[in-house]
Image 1 (tube, rainbow, N blue to C red):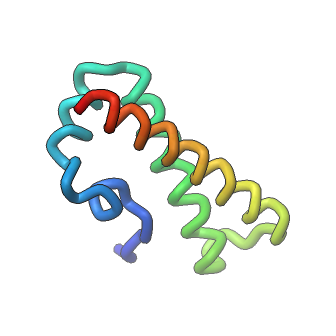
Image 2 (cartoon, rainbow, N blue to C red):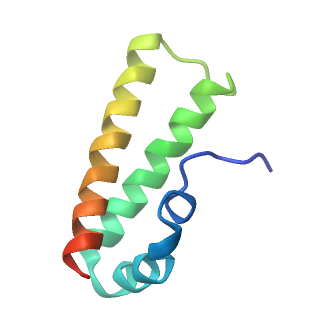
Length: 80
């Protein structure tokens, strides 16, 4: 299995426990995390050419990933 960059636990290592807890207690947060992982893996597949796509589509995937990550960060810091 290849390493997928930008995994939340690696990007927010100090919040690993909070991420796990919120995924269980907050359905909206769990949905955001699920969507993030799906989009992140799509970006990784595009970057590694496992699933080639157009540059425009890859850029849109990256924008969506960044937007989701921002929403996740806001919920993580609001729960603190």
